[in-house]
Length: 524
Image 1 (cartoon, one colour):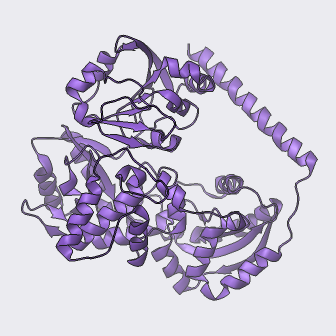
Image 2 (cartoon, helix red, strand yellow):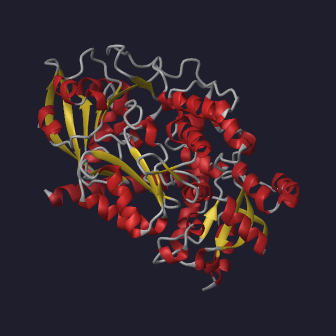
Image 3 (cartoon, rainbow, N blue to C red):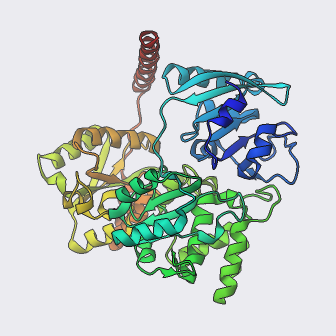
């Protein structure tokens, strides 16, 4: 399968990303048909960049960028081929890998072999690009469902507006004016109230075309596990929309400004091309369309705040109470390198103190006693657990990212108020383990406790988050719990336990590899 075959399989409005592209010339078939839908990404100081200066380029920092890229076709060159090990694109149907770069980064070959063995991807052949470089064509076997749709050009946004009015559904187009001003933003985002999600998806799927629509609801997460805006803000925006000259539902001017800032920070990060104090040159020169619109809205509203960096904008979000909670920022940092840089974790508060918020279903079937025993068996010292007051429940639902308690129970077939906040358990990890280990322990507990898609356990993943939670629901006791955590005795893991743990991991890895090999043999 060559590059022309791949291009022919793409939709007309497909987007393409190049990571670390080391040639001067863009392949002809892409330059002629898709150049306005192409993005180039380079690692600062690590990748050579030879493409023309008039082609827009972005800086990226880690595998997170490739993993969450929403393009339909992705090229991996130079060190970006390491995404074959970790950070393989979740959405792209096709990934084309430089053979030369793969040879220069041999550890990436292990990642390629592993993904072929587990049947995640399929080898589709080799292709020659620019008559000199050989590239490997890979195709994803199973497409991941996303919230991106390709909608009818004929019906357009007016068709969506007519549909929502007929169904009496509320919606908002938060970034309408930015569409097609630059290839910095290729999607039209639409937020619809939760109850209209299924109807809207069916409507979009039944009228296919070339308009890229990214559909969000107020509370349901996108592919990155988060909604477009914090639910409390999303509800406010969708209930206070105005109509533009085309009768489309858009935000008020002040909301349009705030949404643009929120989107620039927590969706785009460094890729907004707005300056950041974390990087002296955090992007390759080109005007930021997001900064242009922020300045435009500021001028219209008569706002004089100086927003020269991402950090300035973040302070503004905090001031108007739009900044996401710490646990949400941690989640966002999985796909946003600027947020990760800005979190400023310290070793002192990265581990140790945690809180579980248990939901109402926990009171059935002796689950609470099981949880207490499970925590103790895993070297956790419980320092307090209490049933939540009515006020604490309200504060939890209003301020904490907790998934199901932000949704209307009637809209969720498998869930109800059974999943409302009910009690909290505050505990200390006596072994002072890495937060990732605590997440693993929590997930194992969830497997024992939960029998549906909605979890009964909501938790913090580090001490900073815990202190923020306590500040919301137990502000008067926060110093007391902090001192109790500091005074808790830690338990060192013995050398024998460490060896047993390493041995267990090796055994599990060998078993997994063996099972994958057997599966491949059987399937072929």
